[in-house]
Length: 312
Image 1 (tube, rainbow, N blue to C red):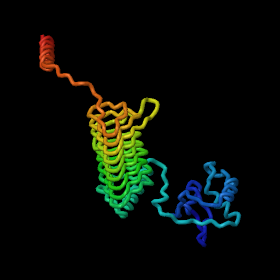
Image 2 (cartoon, rainbow, N blue to C red):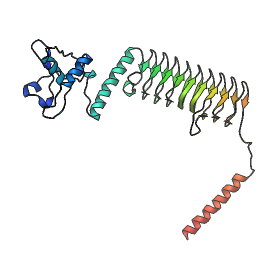
Image 3 (spheres, rainbow, N blue to C red):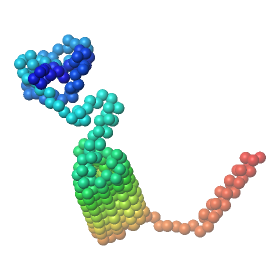
Image 4 (cartoon, rainbow, N blue to C red):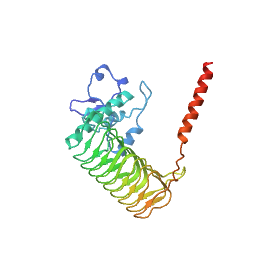
């Protein structure tokens, strides 16, 4: 960027077109240009490609403006904010600088980062004060975490709202459209998507909650799945407040579990369960006396016979 004695910008010269004296100038163009739109389009129409590369340089508008007697000004910027990115290496370097700045801002604002260098923010991540974020947490776009929440290690969040005092993870995946209520728990290997989880509700282990509303203080047992997709369309599951979903329950949507209702472990629920009722759907257990002993004896004898034949 070439300035005159008064400090006005007189030209922006591409490196390939610059003289040795111009190349020695340390003031560089960031690529950001502001001008009145009608004037800018007029100047752009005058840009020619009579240069070594035969290219049209947007930066030529500065010299064209000066030729009209107009003034151009160079505004110094913060280098970290106007880094040029021309390779994957430079992209990673720019990302590292952004992350370092975001981590610093978060901690200054009252967020606890247990291992700052392992936490990755998006450009629009919003985290309230007194939030604790454990190592190896990744925030995708559109995440809001309210005051007092805890995000435990190795969790991934995107396009979601984590309300006050909620506990997420470790190893949780909170997908778009999730709204995790105050003091709710989403534990290890739990995935949510388009899920509204009520205040104080818990899903602590090995669960998929998609296209679902879960009422306040409801407990979701390990292995529960909301079966929301038939290969063509998505369907909603409604679970009332203070319900108890037994471990390994399959909730085949659309289905409603009433307030205070329960489901028996291992059930596949295809019909609504009324408030206060128990939903139980599984085959009766049969015990075949002696079957396991006979099975082992038969398999052991067959294995011994096979080994004897191979030895011969």
